[in-house]
Structures are given as structure tokens and as C-alpha cells.
Length: 351
Figure 1 (cartoon, rainbow, N blue to C red):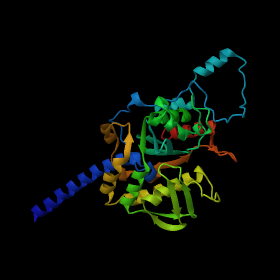
Figure 2 (cartoon, helix red, strand yellow):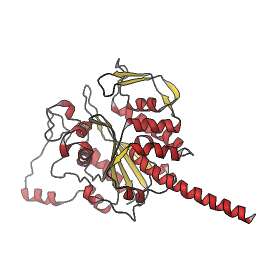
Figure 3 (cartoon, one colour):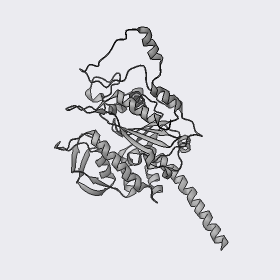
Figure 4 (tube, one colour):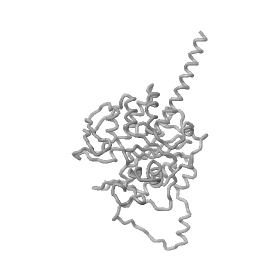
């Protein structure tokens, strides 16, 4: 009798150890699938060090500006050049907070051909187990030297397609650091095939589609065809990705762009998160981990990850990039002062 109990106890311990192993792998998978499970991560990096050699540091030599051509910014000339030099030497409240913080920052995004999509800045405070996620509209107006002639190059999503060091995952990581004025330590890239595969592994995700979504783009590579009826339903992998990618109908009646899309994405994340914490966890891991590309070393990432299920949803906060979409404009215009205020609020947590 005692032998049976002992065996059951050992089997239980083995199952628990195996489950913890799957959880760690799952967290690595989530690094790439913030689209589906953002906010599950729990980082314990007191025994690990951020790889500062690959971190993208913000360029502080130029003032951040989202001003469109033809719009003039109000400027004031300093009356005392000595005072101007003194002001330049002072560090901003955000810079001081960054120096004192051990936050780990990521840019997480999908890619649609030569364009980035579903761009998120994710910041983690390991000391207080806080997660902040800032959704960045793909149409955010952003200029990169050498790419200022074409209108479609003046958006943050176009950076991924730039050549050389100014493009790709590393180029996007650098420009997000410049835009937000904070270091971005790592990037995580995933594709829509992987997102669809994970949703199918979950058996679909239930969502209330607010209206009929009908859109066709024969010029996309591959062609994009979205046809989802309104109403509460369980979306399979393809329809889930189509639901998250939809921006407007062909007839333009429901045209709304990126901002409502971000709200839909955040609601979908919560539904997928609830369903992912189940016995299907190992299958989700083995499916999703195939589709992730990142510059985080595997051993460092594993040292970051611990019991993801223990992460409280109350410690996860989502934000929209401050700014506005002017009428009849294809751009989203960020508000530099409001962006800095948001980052100060994020970095001030736990202080």
C-alpha cells in the first residue's frame, strides 16, 4: 500500500516537473505570439543579465517629430546660449528612470511580405512582475533618412522592408527605440501561418464579430480574401487571422483602419489566453515554437521564463500609442509629449 502511494507521489512529481518544462517552452513560444497570448509571460531575471550588446538605444541627438510636411512646429530661440548648454546636459525624468530600472523591452511584430504588422512594444518589470504592452499602429508616420520620397515609406511598418542596417528586424527595433525614447533589448518576429496553426491547435477561439467582414486583395502576396459573418462564433486559425488583419470592407462602409483593429486584437488576446491554459498546452508549444524568430539567446530566454500560469492578469496593462489619425489622412500621427508621459508612467511603476 505504501509502495503504491509512493509510486503515485513520484509520478505526480514527474508530471509536475514535466508540466513546468512545458510551461517554460510555452513562454518562449509566447515571445513570438503576443498576438494571441500577450501578457502571459513572467520573467525572473535576477540571475540573468540583459544582453546590452544587442540592445537598440534611442537616438537622443535628434528631437522626435511626427509633423507632416507643410505643418510648422512652434519653436522658440534661446536668449542665453549658456543656459541652453546647461539644459542639454540635464537628463530628462524618463532618462533617469531608465537608468534606475531593470525593465526588459521587446518589439514584437508579424510581417506581411516587406511590411511589419501587429507591432507591439512590450515592457517587463521583473522586480514587481509588471507587464506593459503598447500597441503601435502600423500607419504611424515615421521618417527614416534615405526613405523620405515615397509616401508609403513614411510609415513605421515600412521600416522592415528597408535595405541593410536600416531595415529588417534590427532596423525596426532601432526605430521603435527612437520613437519611444527607451531602449529596446530584443525583437520577436512571427508570421500569420504560425498564428493560424496555434489557434487551430486550441480548437479555435470564440469571439463576437461586430459586423460582416468582407475584403479581397488580389495584389497581396499571397492573395488576401476575408469573408466573416457577424455574430458570436468560434473562429478557426484562418478566420482568426483574417479577423485580426481586417481593416476595412471593399465597399468602404465599415472602413476604420488600425485603431479599432487594435481594440479587437486586445480582446482576442484575452480570449485566446483563457483557452490556452489547458491540457492542450504541450501541443500549443510544439506547434507555435516553430514559427518564432528572435535575437534572444535560447539559454537566456529560458532563464527569463518561469511559471507563466502564476502571472496575474491584474499585473498586465495594455496601452495605445498616444496620437491621432487626422481626417482624410492615411497616417497616424503620434504625440511626442504624450508618448514621453506614457513611458514615464510605465517606468515609474513600482518606484
